[in-house]
Length: 427
Image 1 (cartoon, one colour):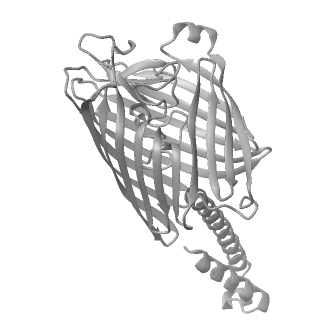
Image 2: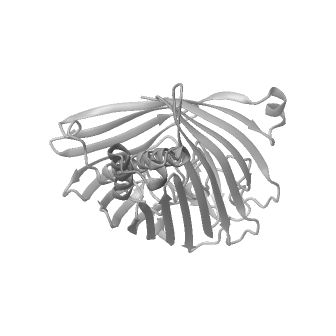
Image 3: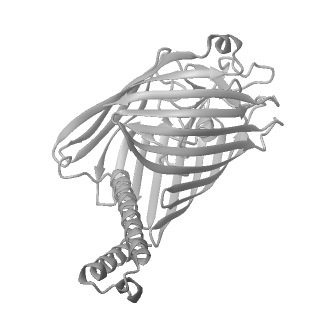
């Protein structure tokens, strides 16, 4: 039911009640009918409030995506914010941790800078962990029109469901092979409109400067970058002997959106092509294709996505070496990734708590070149917003999944379980 229809229904019911033009049964002092009418009016008012809240949320999301700013933000100036986060972990694959009843540990301290100076936009985020620090993104840009924005620097590479193909703290399995919230050094142009979203990006190299980047470690990265080619016989977690990186990558993302009487539906396609370079010359190429859909109806959200990628390399190998979070891992040179997410947003006001989101996120990496066992991850959880505090409560069930005692190239048939509470203060 649209906002107009809800408003008319409530107004009509109210007018009849005030003017005394109630139905015949009500005029005959039928109190039950009058109570039913009042109850229906309350239900309509509640539906209108929910619809207005969803509309405001959709408008805020569209403004953020398009780079439009409020009148307060339109003035020159850079604002900063950040977060401090901790987490509690209890995993069934860590006997010592189980005996201790789990571990509470520091997760992250981060700073964000956003704003504009002389019509030039700035956005940057840097993160500190106990074992490394890393840049998440850093770019400046310009709003050419109300719908078109250009960015240059370390930008987020557009792909599939944006901005995240997940609801949980652990993202989806796309994140661990470089297809979710992945930064890269280059340029990006994006269009955000009522019906069409368009993204075009040219990524010269990864956020660490590619194979010859001047960094402390190619493993100190926020997301998973190609750092080498895994030679036959090497350990999947060993440092790369044959170094390599992605270069000159072209990315296109096109999404069509429909407003279905208040419900929102999105269908899109993504494509990618780039080079793999060892520092001296090309040693192969990478292609990727993706399809995605998003559906919002009332308090419900649904995501579905398929991604296929293929590294065509010139040398014998057992996979691609990737680096992130201070360690190296291996992924197959080819695979298919399927994800399906459902979430329910519940406005719940109790003390400092403002809202709850319940979700279930499922990921599958299959059809791996050279490997038989699939990577599977299911996360069922709840996100709690309470003032400046945001909390993820996740139960992860997975096999051959990073951060759950596995690897994407693992050949285990064992399921691992991890209970995780990540809570942080955002300022």
